[in-house]
Image 1 (cartoon, protein in one colour):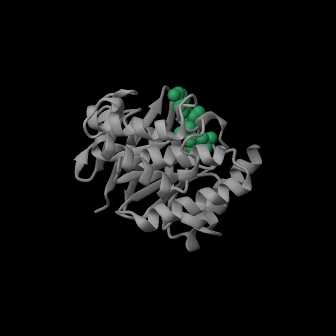
Image 2 (cartoon, rainbow, N blue to C red):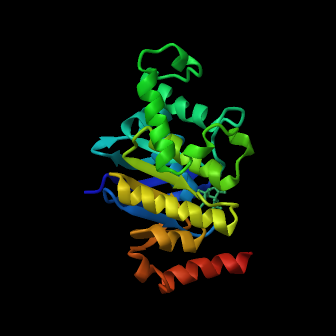
Image 3 (cartoon, rainbow, N blue to C red):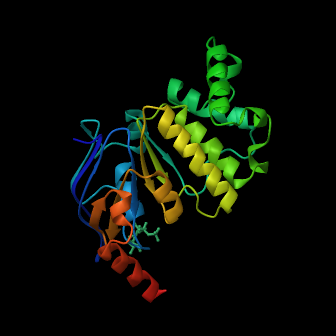
Length: 253
Ligand SMILES: Nc1ncnc2c1ncn2[C@@H]1O[C@H](COP(=O)(O)OP(=O)(O)OP(=O)(O)O)[C@@H](O)[C@H]1O
């Protein structure tokens, strides 16, 4: 039994069946990649996991509890954090101030940006934020304006903002989209470090196969809303069904 169990999930948008009886089991403390050509249903599936979409049928269980019918905030409180394609950080604030936001959100249930000036546990929160910045090698950038950083550093900051909430499941939606190769490689290194040093499960949607094969323990290939194959990376490489799915994409391009 995985920490995340998706059973028979289907989702329609009008006449279009975006997901069709999807089954997915993600084992605890593994990295599970979901790949597939454009329009395969990857984002729709991810949105069903975080409460942004409600499946028409099926169930989504996380850590033994159903996520269906819960708000994105409640699902986050259950231990699922999502990193978006475009980093969701506060550009006008410093790196350090960005780190304080999820800490207050978790503690107070709301974003109280200047609350740390007056709370008793300020010291503890500050030291946790600094430690997390150390962990992601950003301590020396803590005073920088978040908006002025490279895409790779923004992604690093966003991951730190997710990790400080101590999620059990980290969902990554194309974490290296639009990045230069050097930033992509840094992100791979960071994710490896996160995976190896924490009690955490990672589910990743990614088009860049270098990223997928560098990180994934298992891979599910979606095509036209249905899982085609699920296996270890070595057997996904060169799998005829996978080649066929991606060839279809090339033919349409
Ligand atoms: N809100 C929506 N309304 C209508 N159709 C949608 C909506 N969201 C997604 N779709 C359609 O559902 C199908 C699956 O889309 P989805 O974005 O989940 O695919 P994807 O695998 O994430 O694609 P990509 O790799 O291009 O991001 C596509 O045909 C898409 O056009």
